[in-house]
Length: 239
Image 1 (tube, rainbow, N blue to C red):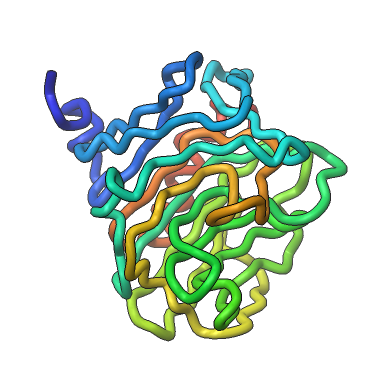
Image 2: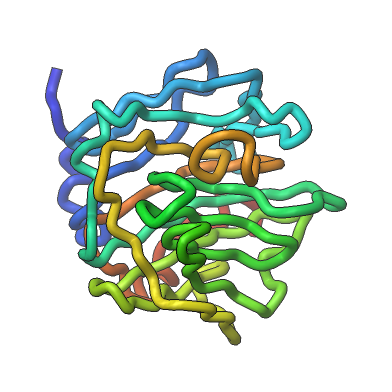
């Protein structure tokens, strides 16, 4: 009944600062467990289904039309994921079906005003948002590399500070071009749930497609680390 990751995983340099990791090894059921030391508990909401990649890795398939499919960790169980103005990073493997319209929330924590953040897939780009309505802050790629109908590793690294810009990564490489419409207000200054498969609360930005191996770090991943993750795992997704 140990409370840490396996010895080999814990010692891997790439996992330094890893505070959330969902390998989806369950492959069945409605409960998903984080394998990092905090063991954040996640519950499946709605009727998302378990699917397996060609390499045997499990993923969860969310249906946008249902507007009910998502994973949630309650605010009481993820209070440690309040980064405020410190640097942090995340990655996830996603596969968005061809013909999907609109934006889909991959993961995030906060509300629709000035607190928190969200990581989204929009058309064939990805987008980091810090705050939504007042003000609308964020960074998006403009290179159309997160194409629909294929597996992609997507991620971001947010540098600390109220005026941070977050490089966004697709398949281990940062975007060739960015749209930065404002500085970020990424501090989650109050208690919020952590969501995977939708953007913040309500029915805004539901995700359509498969998500696998979502992870979060309490530090800034370097470009070489994003590339290393992609190269280590790409064969599992037939990339």
